[in-house]
Image 1: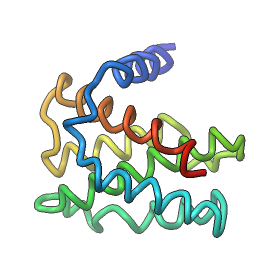
Image 2: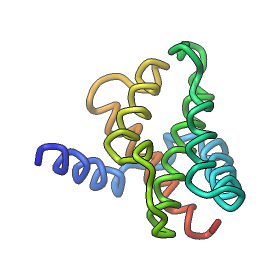
Image 3: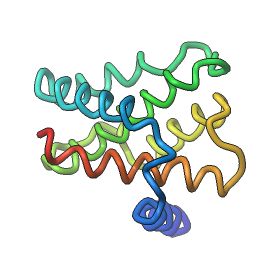
Image 4: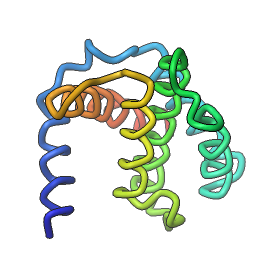
Amino acid sequence: MKLKRLLAAVAVLALFAPAAHADQAGLDRAVRDAVKTYRGGGASALMEVSQVCYPANNKFVDNGEKVDYCVGFDMASLFILTHTKTPKPQYFDPLISLSRMTGAAEHAGLFVGPSGLDQYVGSRMNFVESRVPSKL
């Protein structure tokens, strides 16, 4: 039950977080790439790209831009799979995805602390969610 509340809180914060803090060009590229990947191979192709996207061996330092792109790609993948009602592989379970995205972003130094997490996730989620339907 606590996990559902956490996801609900993150979703609400996404509605109010300003997208200006996100790299909009990089996130837009991640959305376009996710849509193209989905059209070419469905959920399994999204999963394959996501798995190789994040820097290997937890080498997140100095890879902030790359991690940010990967987070955008994962968020776009979740929204695509939800919007198209495509069954999600366990890899794209919302809690697993959120853990993967925030863990990588935190290691890359893209946010600090709970308020930084809320702003980081919220701004990207809001931006990505607004772009996916128009690209599908």
